[in-house]
Image (cartoon, rainbow, N blue to C red; front, side, top):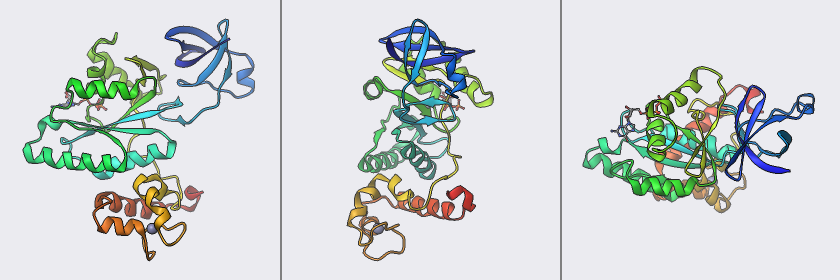
Length: 291
Ligand SMILES: Nc1nc2c(ncn2[C@@H]2O[C@H](COP(=O)(O)OP(=O)(O)OP(=O)(O)O)[C@@H](O)[C@H]2O)c(=O)[nH]1
Ligand SMILES: [Zn+2]
């Protein structure tokens, strides 16, 4: 018996990567009866061309359907379209919720003037303080950054995330110039997923398995409770024990360490404002969405 990860699923066959080798397998007959639907990213046990077992999932995304996602590269345009902290924060909390490590990658920094770049660099520093990996350099795809990113993603299951035109395909092309796909094909692969429900597969990109269909966008519903939300902001999560009230929502409560930190410039004002906006959004959702 071997163990591996499903890299691709195609009309009943599952291609499993195990120790760098690909094996074509099919599901055991009783999978269907037991309503087991293996998906890309599943860690599995297999033998003689048959999947025997799907191991418990760390997480699973619906769009694209990928299991056990370790990290998501949030490709974020520094300009064109203009940088939106609100959109970035939405993406980050969606990932936090799934237990997926966000990696923020600023693209299009080459299109900024000096002051514009300084601003973005400051924002990047703020997100680093929060605890995120942030890639930001005057030239967005310089080798140094790419090497670091490769190191970070090595051995992980990864999705690309980001607005249309943010530069997801461009980044992937830079990461894997020697990938067996032509430039156009990569972006085709990335684009196809949006319009049809075609199968996802994982591209083997220098040690990482990267979903060829970009991940969920900013339009996720906030299907969480208002109590859950502050825990999805790492900087608030860290300070919450210092708030006077347990379960402090950091809004109207007195002696709130988070509000103090915002006032003292320790927590980014833009992050806190987004927190308040998301809180309102969740509070005003129809009750059945709140669970
Ligand atoms: N100058 C500059 N142009 C970039 C950069 N990143 C992407 N672009 C350009 O922006 C356009 C969109 O880039 P893509 O890589 O196709 O963006 P995408 O995120 O894959 O977009 P979708 O496939 O629509 O989701 C292309 O014309 C790229 O050449 C960058 O860092 N600098
Ligand atoms: Zn508080």
